[in-house]
Length: 230
Image 1 (tube, rainbow, N blue to C red):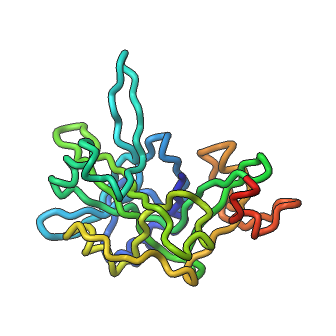
Image 2: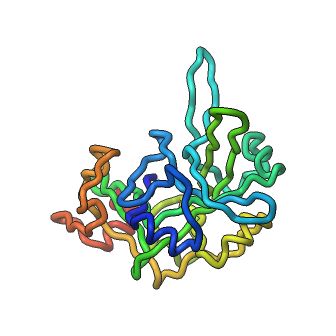
Image 3: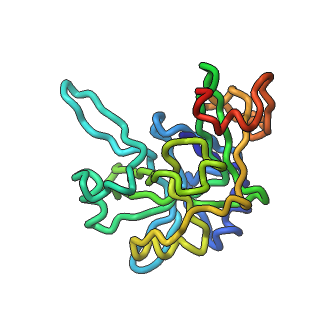
């Protein structure tokens, strides 16, 4: 999964109602989890919700000095994984700030990138866990929570797993209290459509057409949501 924040810094600050810290990405930022990018997050400190910056993906050390990046965590099994249970017990919750994200589908043996955003534009948020960096030079890291699509959502999300999307009014329930109260995004408020494959070929691609709808020859919209054509 890749996320984007195409809004300029002042527009993000106005939408959030708070100044952003240095390094908070904005202005056509597109990042892929497996590149361990810095992403903008909201987290809590002393009963206040604050903006911050974190690396996307927890790092697990394997044998021979190898590292594995874990960008996502399954909501249904959080308490069963020691890596995530530790963060839950410490109350280290956050949301990632974005205005769109990319996922892919395979149809007719070809991988197509899809982009999800709000029809009217604007920010939305992905629930996550935060591993706070402690000590000089230590960076905070985060993971995105995912879940199975709910009934009726397959018409919007053609994927077996979807991120836990939150609206601005739901942030306090998750960040401060650890409750995911949302029944999922309104199908009328979001849209998912194909985009050009530049974003697959070059994770750092920042062209203005990265979020522009693109029609692939021979691929109709219903095909994207029909798993039998994968």
